[in-house]
Image: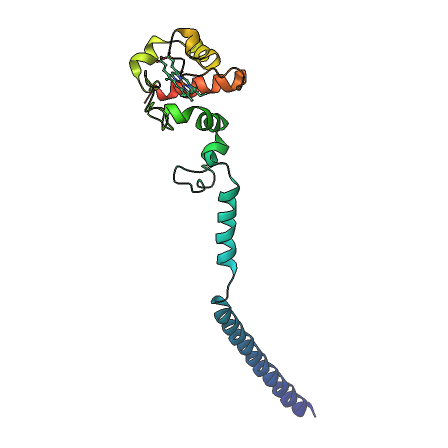
Length: 172
Ligand code: HEC
């Protein structure tokens, strides 16, 4: 009776083990088949593509890179730097995105928009002068009237931010 019971237990355990292996194998095979078949119908890469396209379409131009692409995550030029966003919209058409003064609208201007990398000019002017020209325009300082007055458009903080930005260009 005792021995018989033992054999029976071992027997059922074997069956249990075997069916478990079979089941596992079957579910594994199913997974491989399913993912393999899904791959070619996988819509996720299209979601990603349309999401990027939609994001580009909804962004104002200054929030994109010069090539019209999304800026790399974390390095979003305009988002990370609101001063640069202002500069890109209001100033870069004349002074250029890199501050060198040869923006798209600079061609017909005489005198040319200031190149902010010009070290001699940087040394000649103080912050108050730069602030004043931005606020009141070139004409108020006996400079070209093509340099508009921005006092009505920009806040004190924004003008101060622009002065800092222009100063930073003077260092390289
Ligand atoms: C329509 C073209 C135009 C735009 C837009 C423009 N500027 Fe100018 N800017 C000029 C021109 C032209 C001069 C050169 C004036 C001169 O030398 O007589 C100038 C000169 C300057 C100067 C130097 C002044 C000096 O002492 O020589 C500063 C600073 C300046 N701009 C800042 C800005 C900022 C900041 C913005 C945007 C908020 C801006 N400008 C937008 C045309 C422009």
